[in-house]
Image 1 (cartoon, helix red, strand yellow):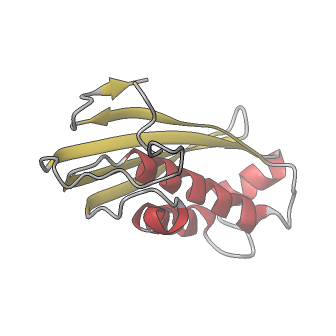
Image 2 (image 1 turned 30 degrees about the vertical axis):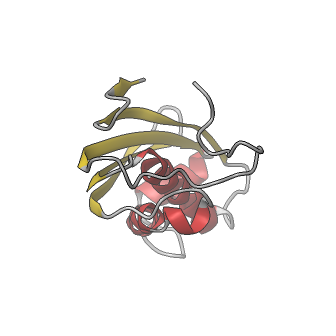
Length: 156
């Protein structure tokens, strides 16, 4: 299978989806930010000076889903029917996991939107907590699953 984002001359292009059928599609992505005990406790206890970190990061992640086409040049602007972003706090490892699920009815998938949502949410956690400790590590951002579309289902 060739790369669809290049024309015959090797130039980048947006894939033409005009002939595709609209279908129900969904995608879920996940990622983690490793933080210090001090940052973890401040987030968990909602004592970070900039505000409630996870509430702001949730809103930022959902906005990231909605603005993906503005950030990723060859991404289609798709009509989202839902975007949900949740966090799991893991006190034993001082990690915060983000999980983003996006749904749409359209001609192309929502994988990039889910991945962008997780990325923006975790970047927001970093931004809001960097005054406490800058040694946070964002990692393991990946597609967990996707459903619908020509390529069918995918589960990591």
